[in-house]
Image (spheres, rainbow, N blue to C red):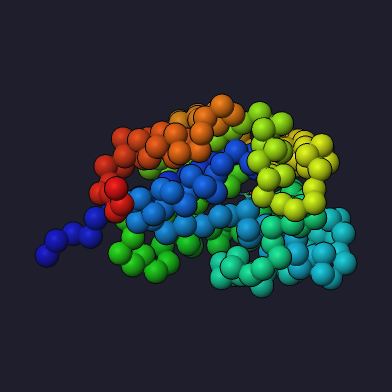
Length: 220
Ligand code: DC
């Protein structure tokens, strides 16, 4: 009997607005990969916290609500606002919350493998903490001003300077927290997307994946 081909794991990390989501979707389509935007898990907890008027230092209650989160919760509406993003960054410093969400991310790779060639996860600590043995790690980055401009174009009625201020706060918190800070893994391919059109970024990322994993291509 033929052995099942090994399912690959692709890690994409970087700060917000660097292009992770677009690249992850492109690669997921091109190589038939199951996809998880791990930031949405933190946003699910953040949205619940805001609804229940919890503060970021209400650790015990925040951990309790996190225990009920499942991977299916990420499809709900109302997760993309800046308010939810800011709260997500604040609760992401809590190690107990990270431990619960880490398990969901690791279970994702082995659940319902289907006919996918593997999984792709995007976040802040995929290549460093969640899957340090990922088959291909990509770290996307870009100047903060450009990232803020991109975010502004995705939202209505927001000012670029305000987005940039909030982004700077989040970048600082995400990069300086003691547990699993935003960092490129030593063996990650780094792509600076500041001056690159997004289709070139996607092609570069696909080249790295192909180089590391030798996958068959689903789309032209
Ligand atoms: O990628 P995003 O903007 O949706 O993420 C929201 C917040 O969640 C981000 O500011 C930090 C946190 N996060 C994290 O700590 N680890 C991840 N793997 C993904 C997101």
